[in-house]
Image 1 (cartoon, rainbow, N blue to C red):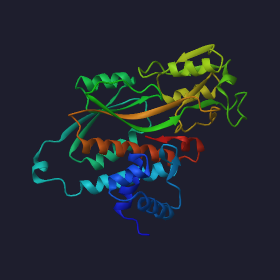
Image 2: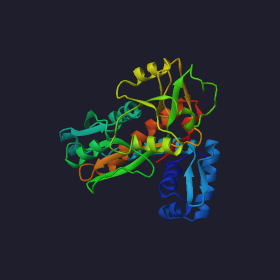
Image 3: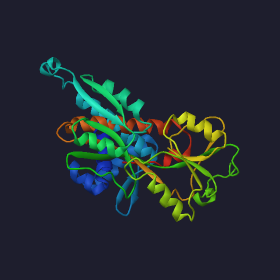
Image 4: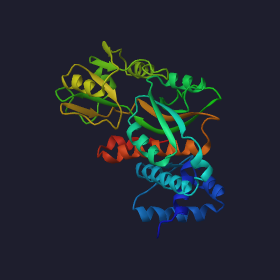
Length: 314
């Protein structure tokens, strides 16, 4: 089969609709025809893109990567020839973007520079996701990358729109000298006597979700070091066996630091794109989402670590 744009649109439609039936209705075809088309697409890529669930379909890890790349291609195609002489004569559009502690920033910005040549990006580092929402509501930003947690979705007014980029498990970083270094995975309760490095309140549920998970595991951390600084400095302290920490699934450990999954993955974090309605139109919101999603999937693709494959698209 020769891959065509209609195949990419079909993949994205299934991802957006969450089921073959709903996607078929959007595309104006029968569910059986779309199912056969999906089978041919999966045969072309040589991987399964979606798994069937009780409620519909969910992307696999390979599917999430193909979806992100498909959105990227479609966004680029839609932008071809759209820049009119009137657009060329306009002053550059300024896009004020705030980002919390997120690994997607470099790849996202690189993609936006090529995808939005008529725009000027002004980046702002803001730790608390709640503060990003406030800046959007006050008109001081156009968009941002924030975080929230399953069951604790980010609070915002009607002036702000939110779209999930990816949901990933929080994983454990510990010293290569730690007593549990030989374990494949570690139960949270086994760390009841360890000192912890924790980032401060992010206004979205952290560190409350951490303390709730500890309580569920039957303990309260005996020592907590609040840390908000250079992630590399944090890893050096962990390497010295001064404490353990929860880190992002795409983290690359330095020598002396090991990453271990937590048994049962009790903690998850979701990256979200947030933007101010009226200041960001649908086309720009899609460009921002595609750039962030592709950047995240690229991070996952660079790692052979199976923990990154547990990330959930959207």
